[in-house]
Image (cartoon, rainbow, N blue to C red; front, top):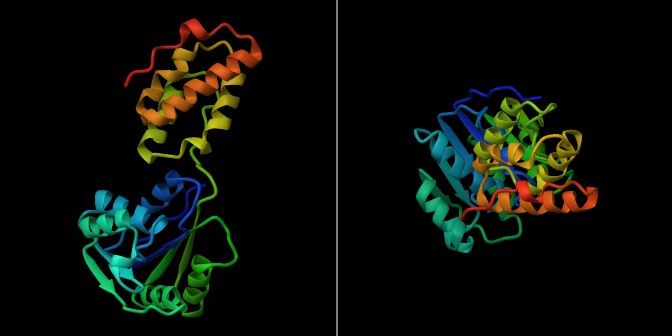
Length: 235
């Protein structure tokens, strides 16, 4: 179930460097409506959120807070920050507590915290949540454990097309939808592969390649005669 929309003027964002699905992140960001955002500037949720908000809320003020220096960040992250941050602040801390200081700095200057988490009970994201609660700031938890878009429950092509469009819009990781998608295929064995794959032309090329391979594996395992029906993949 989708969470509430947040309309605070200033929102701090925290989240993991490694997480399973950008689709869940984007869905949560779509529910944030702020004038200003405070973002940490690391790879993962920080940079992905910065890029997405720059695209979907270009009028927002996006503060990126760096624990020490921007030049300490990976080159790709530096490039994203320079392109999409409105304000860059380097705190100049090199000690072991630099990330904690950065996170507290963001919370102290925001009205609320939006935390994108898979439920970990340790680490920087968890500590930032605890600090915000200690300070009496409202905390909204956004679940990053998996992609939440419901899979089609029938062989209806309109339902399937809507599902594919949502995958394309959210740029979800292919691994998070592969197994449920094959399960849907098994339920609807009378559908031709072209019926399934036509809407998936909206999905990025790398995902299409994976889908094709898995469909062929499924055909081999079940003995279904589908190979002639597979379209040729286009570059």
